[in-house]
Length: 394
View 1 (cartoon, rainbow, N blue to C red):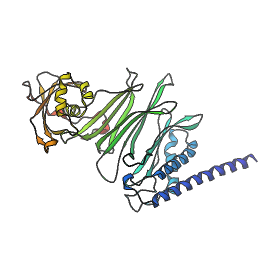
View 2 (cartoon, rainbow, N blue to C red):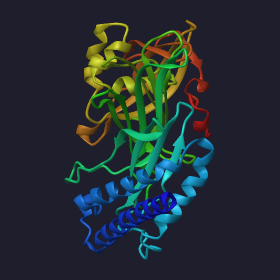
View 3 (tube, rainbow, N blue to C red):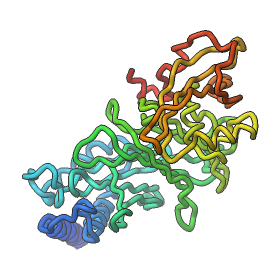
View 4 (cartoon, rainbow, N blue to C red):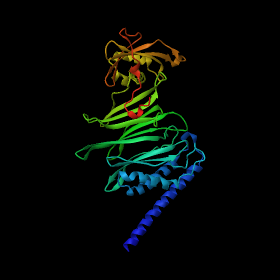
């Protein structure tokens, strides 16, 4: 009798799961039948319904996933089942409404499981991420990241380049809150330049708290737009977040952008390095507001030059970088152009930069004339550099 009851219970579970997939399929069909709104890439409130139907069905399957070794086989089974409800072979590769992207599963050595899903819109999949912790042999969702505001100007769908987590452990036990770093980019129909996003949450007991919410304009290289890491320096209690992406400099050059922040409680502070070469440092100094540039300036008197050169659009060309007679000083030359006067050329400006290892830069002085002791050409000073091996593509 007990065997019969167990079989009936399993049959009931299977029927419920089939019903969930049928409901998801119906939502996808409805999405596909809609005339897409170009302002939101076809996204609407119905897209959230599909996201949650997909998420809930996957959560119903997680009970069979026990350890890391099972992840690959589990992913194959899940994605095969979803192919039956997703739109078959899109007839328009620029309209993915009604289709599902591949579901990705990642289990780390802390015992957390990340699930990344994607629901089709125009030209890309709108990806969402969910983080689970095993509690009493059941996967419990502790964090999620979805884009569900479909208002014009607010909707920012993304492809997720990575979800990284960090939690301090001591003597085999958790010793502090969980932190989550997400990296993403907008894809659209076609371009090698796109917006990137980087966000950091602290997963507090009541609700996750968003501490960092950054964006940038990035160029695609290798197989990603943005890389990052989150952790903790051995000699500090603050959480360390390091982001890199290849962006557009003021001189029109492609350069490496570094976003390095320290998180101590609710306090988020940008820290060194802010750049990886003298020229890139000058670029950063010119484009940041004075309140930030002042932290990397030797004197408040430099605010006059900063006010003169800083603008909504900073334009110009960099010249040669020269090494000065003092070992830790470099001179960067910049020929500004005025966007208010049809980008008319203006006289060269010279920046005296202190560079101490590995990448600690300070603006020492700015002048309309070059410094007499800065006469040694140093083309290697502005060589391409990266703090991530995967970014070293030149």
